[in-house]
Every structure is written in structure tokens, then in C-alpha cells.
Amino acid sequence: MAKEVIVSAIQASGNVHIGNYIGAIQQFVKLQDKYQGYFFIADLHALTEPQDPEKLRKQILDSAALYMACGLDPKEAVIFIQSQVPEHTELGWILNTITPLGELERMTQFKDKSKKRKNILAGLLNYPTLMAADILLYDADLVPVGKDQSQHLEFTRTVARKFNSKFGVTFKEPRALLKKEGALIMGLDNPSNKMAKSAQSPNNYIAILDEPNEIQRKIKIAVTDSGKEIKYDPVKKPAISNLLIIYSAMSGKSIKNLESKFKEKTYAEFKSSLADLLVEKLSPIQKEYKRLIENKGELLKVLNNGKEQAQKVARTTMLDVRKKIGLLCE
Ligand code: AQP
Image (cartoon, rainbow, N blue to C red; front, side, top):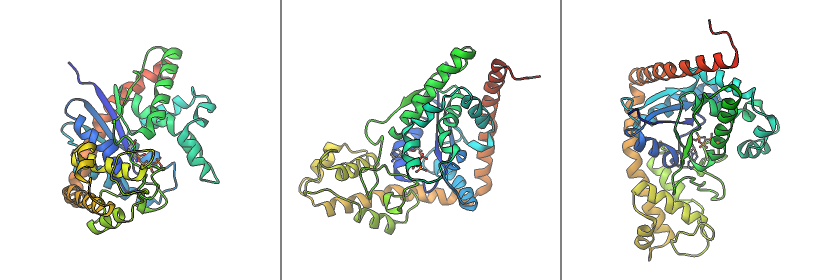
């Protein structure tokens, strides 16, 4: 029997951080044997925020190298760059033509981000239609995402239904695959905002490529809560709960186990142990990343191969879509 398909991505919008790792990449790696995975670097999505071209190019390659350094295997999964498969933008455009403006304006990410800027870009508004295209092109059954993307996935299901009822059954409605814990890692500098590449301050996140002394420093200054107890209580102790989730995800130990391990310990002792754990877990990833980046030819070969495999599927989907909506296909 054919494997079910999973599709997911990270944006090439900055430094890949432990929120991306715990909420997304760790899952991709676990799922790659069981499912046919399509994992890409969303460089076109990154353009919805202003980017420096030189930095963007580096971020794209860095993110791809990090995928592999974290354990994604090109023999198991298709790894590619979004902009190298132009069918993404083509389907994105077509989905725009059946999406009411109000649906896009209601998206939480659009509302939050547009509050922070003077000039609101159309690309930011149309982000969900491109994301829907990313997923629907590959007939995905499942989409592993962090909680921050669940609304966009619901939108994807809606637009797939709409297209199917207008033009005949074409797309599968994908399901979200959410982690129970670690679905949303919060910022170290403010536990009410998510950890994000686009955060104002680098103290918001631990980047996978942060040096050991940088990791120690950021964890040391991470916000904590009042009181002294190391206890999981997201309402009364959001900062410590967030650190416990990170500890648990990186160590594989349960939160209960960690609460008893740190029962008599201070916040400082807990943080120091967490920083050591992060250094220990991230250092082999950093080493492998370095090897891959130094062998750029090997990396580009993987990405080129991924592009070809992805495009084969994407072209077939687009031929069907073009026929159904009435475009010339001869
Ligand atoms: N804080 C997070 N906790 C858990 N999962 C997260 N993801 C992102 N942030 C967290 C998941 O990682 C995948 C890639 O998401 P992204 O590239 O959009 O990451 P980002 O850090 O959120 O990047 P930006 O540029 O800062 O994006 P915006 O500003 O759009 O949020 C996704 O599966 C996501 O769920």
C-alpha cells in the first residue's frame, strides 16, 4: 500500500530556532520512515517580510543544511526549495481567485503582523493561499505543524472543499498533526509571545546554531516567574512551564520526572542544567551542519534532486487543475 503523504516547511526568514526544531523538525524526522514526506524551505513565504537578498540566500541554504543536520534523510523524504517549483505560485494564484478577501483578513497571523507595520503588503495577506497551494499540490494527508499554523491549515481545508465543489473533486483535505506538548514554544524574553525567527530581539530564541556561550547567556537571562518552585503551571508559571517543555522535548524526559528531579533546586540551577542540555544536544547538529555547508556541492545535489521529485508530482496536479478550471492545456 502507498504511504500516506505529509508536507511541511520552515520559512527561510531568519535563524532556525529550537521552537522550529521542537514544534516541527523533530516531528518531521520521526515521521519520515512511516510517511512519504515532502519537506521544503519556504523562501517565497519569507518574502512576506522585508529580506536582505544576500542574507536570504544564506538563510535558504542554512535551513536546508539544518534539515539534514537534524536528521532528515534525502533517501526517505523529498527535500527542496519552494521557489524552485513554480507550480506553488501558480496554484497559489488560482486559489486566490476563489478566496473571499474577508477570509484572508480574518487570519490571526495577518491581523497580528499587520498591526506591527505601517505598510501592509499584499503578500502578507495572501500568505494562506500560497500555503494552501504548498500542501494541496502534493495531495497531503497530514501536515505536521506547530499550533501557530493551525488556522492556516483549517483555511487550506476550506479552500480545498471550495475548489472541489466548484470544479469537481481534485484535492484531498489534509489533517493537522499537532504535538501535544511543545506545539508552541514561547519566547525566552516574553512567555506570552511565541518563539519566532522574526522576533525583535535574538534573546527571544535559542538558534540551533548558537554558540555554547550564547546558549548559556540566553538561558541565564530568560524571564522566570515569581516564586521558587520548578513546577508546570502554564497559567501561574508560564515562563518556567515553557522552559520545562523545552527541557522535556530536548531530553525525552517527562515533565513529571523533571519536576521531581528539580524539586529542591533553584531557578538558577534548573536553568544551568537546561543550558548544558541544549549545548549537548545541539552540538552534534552544529557539527553536521558545518560539514554540509562546507560541502555545498553535495547539498545542492540533494536539493536539485528534491526539486525534480517534487516537480513531477506538482506538474501532474497542475495539469489536472488547469484542465478543470478551463485553461488551455495543449
Ligand atoms: N515557537 C514555536 N513553537 C513551536 N513550533 C513553532 N514553529 C514556528 N515557531 C514555533 C513551527 O515551525 C515551523 C516553521 O515555522 P516558521 O518558519 O514560520 O517559523 P517562525 O519562527 O515562526 O518564523 P517567522 O519568520 O518568525 O514566522 P512568523 O513571524 O510568520 O511566525 C512551522 O511548522 C511552525 O508551526
